[in-house]
Image (cartoon, rainbow, N blue to C red; front, top):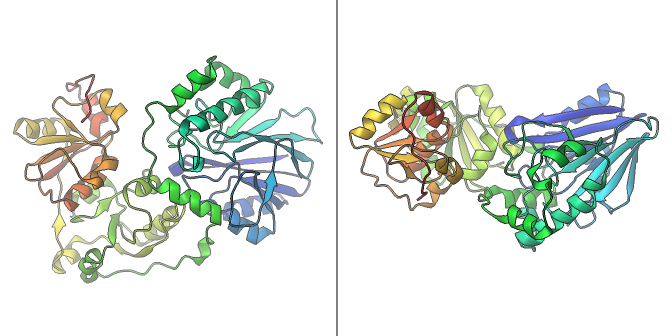
Length: 463
């Protein structure tokens, strides 16, 4: 049996290639599918099945392109609504791939159409079965019941389905069964997902908080309380996956854009997205450009902070980064990229553009500014803020900044802080778009603040 996992760290997404005796299946493919084709060819296998455990909301799937390039059918749960041809799977169905048998379990709860796949091998009956759980069961967590895939049902309805799927299907399996989910730590599809990428039913039964003995009513309450807002792009990705995304090869090659054209582009409603590191952005950037560094969770933060469908103009550190950024944006359906420019402050200034510099402060320097009557804005999530914050900090999460209503005054100088300096750098651009000029960023964020042993107030009351 061939078993090859593919893990995309920037989206915390796990997909899988499995095969035997000349045939292979891909489970929950990401949009760029060349890697599956190359791996199958290297193993001497032909992809004969493409299976979606559900229609994902946090990334764009490559099922349509992969099917077009292999001729393999796309399999989905029977409740799945699609705009493309697909084979429907119901509880108890089996999909044969060489000597492998993929036993279908209907496991709704994260989405109504969710399925899990229990894989055995007729040629190796002694093999420990592998369970591909999609977003029903994670390592250390279970799927959220409130995301875009649950359209038409309340979170409570979905949580009840999830309880039944876990207790009537998954937890009836032997403890030795291996668990392979579609997401890992950092995904918004769960709340406390582990860094581990594989586990067993028995270990999850013992350690997963959501699988501990409790009533169905208690489980529903637990699953639906204190849920963070879902990123706005999720609904759009779910809809795109329902129709099938265009092939990546159809995306145009990005043209370079001259500095003189930037002002007109911004005035025309195009967002300038700066993918450089936060410290480089701080040294010189275009006013109002949004910094989301390529080295972080670039695609998911773009989807969180920039309205879906917004045309984008990239600023990058080097030409090669433009293609990388375009690919990562495409993974979450942001295909409207009009061009790119390699950052050049001298050219920007010569073209009359507003170039800004934002000091990157050490925690000690930030303390001096705060003591000199600078206001401190903490842009982390409520749970992070409640766990400890700088005394006197004003709390407003970064994903709410673009909505306005910021509880600080634009005319006052402002220090911005987050967990590491990544989100606060993005917040700088959002604040500049709303008229803030005198800004500074805490390099290293609260992690650096704690490392410097500076005072932390807790518990907190969020604004």
